[in-house]
Structure formats: C-alpha cells, structure tokens
Length: 86
Image (cartoon, rainbow, N blue to C red; front, side, top):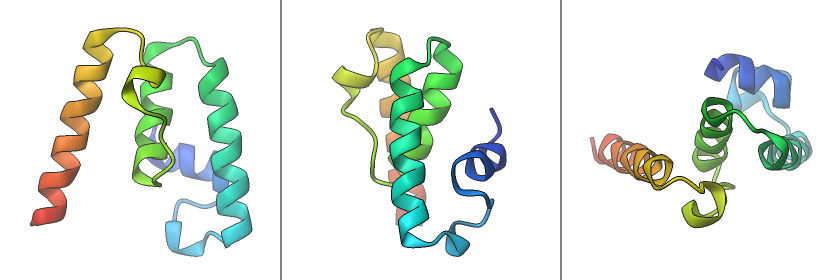
C-alpha cells in the first residue's frame, strides 16, 4: 500500500496541506474503521503508520496482537522521532 495511494483514498489528495479540516476528520474516521476490519498484517501496518503520522493511531498494545508487529511499530516511531530531530 503506497503512501500517496492511502492519502488519495482517504483524503482525495496526496498533499496533506490541501486537506480541509472536515475532510481530515472524516478521512481519519474512515481509516480507523478500515483498520479495525483489516486482516492483512501489511495493510494494517500501513494504515497504522499513516494514522500515527496524523496523530490518530491507536496504542500499540491495542493495534497489534503480534509482539513482532509492535516492535516494528516502535522502530517506525523511533525513526520518525530521529527524523524530526534533524
């Protein structure tokens, strides 16, 4: 699942600056619904990462049953924190 494809699917644009506040809320709500119904690990992780970037991701222990998936999510969070420092 490509980042730009996710942005277009949920927000009708790949440019986050173009998203109207109401569309942002609606898109996040739809992502949360899709995340809860998604069974594919890779797609769930892709949804979680976008929700994380938007400040709307569920806690790791709620989002991921598999400890390996939680570790991968923590690695992603650490990577984003390091990128923000630069």
